[in-house]
Image 1 (tube, helix red, strand yellow):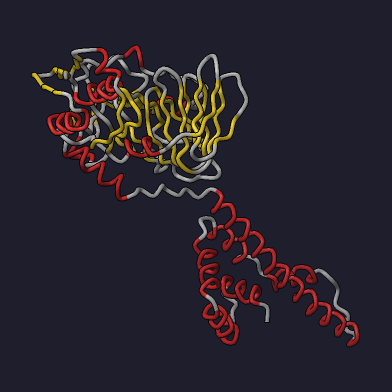
Image 2: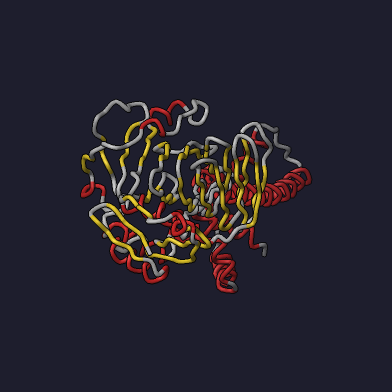
Length: 401
């Protein structure tokens, strides 16, 4: 007995007691059998396919086919009719069962193709999100793209309930001139009307969950333009600054990050984009492509960095650890000058730095710090590593031998 036909009978409500036993045995034979059967029943468009086949009455189709024919009283002719009817009935039933499974299979394939799988958020990222919120580093301004004249905008913290964290934020100090421009071709008309721009200040960061479940970690001094709801064919955002993307997998809709120097296209992965000075894309895992303005698409492999500017494109292999580290709450510096290190920390802690000599500023060091330690603790660590004297006077750090 064909299991496909039995499944069809089960769906159509035509299954017999014997067939029910065979189906139950088949489902118990293998976990994969039951999984496939349940996936078929739970496919998003399954109800449509079932409706079609629930109304497929083979018996009535046969009656309609022969109803208009004149009946012959001849016994031999009547016998031929019965045999033909039985044969055609069997063919129609098998054809209906096969066609049903084909249509349902296509429906299942389509549901898998368009399935959106949110990214897996590691425990280290979740801890970083909590520490950031507790230390007061999580903050941003969200506003409508087409209404930039408002003096105040509503801020939202994605790590708390929306009801609790809606508040008016002071926008003083935000550099409007550095905000990314919005190309009309980037979003549809409907998306433009509902587009939002999120901005972080020089000493803040923010985690934002997009419509598809993609998690974006915005570093300080960053702007991101995004639609409240993505379209059916693609997912577009515009970035100016630095952000770490943990993209939801969706084979049917590529995720595209538009930057001043080119576009980053991805289907589901983790990568870092920095548009300060030039556009830098570092692929942590998965697969992305980079398309420079007016150039050809280039595929990246995990561990590669692509640097884009108006004059050049450079592809190199890099250590991804520093890019992962800032996303999980750490600063990591490999062979950086003290001036470079203090430049990053000064922005993060909103202070200024003064070196007693240029030689001190040029010294190179390796080190790592928690982004959520207080400034005093961080300065004490640097002092112990470098051997220099570091004094914190109000909002000014003085470094000397």
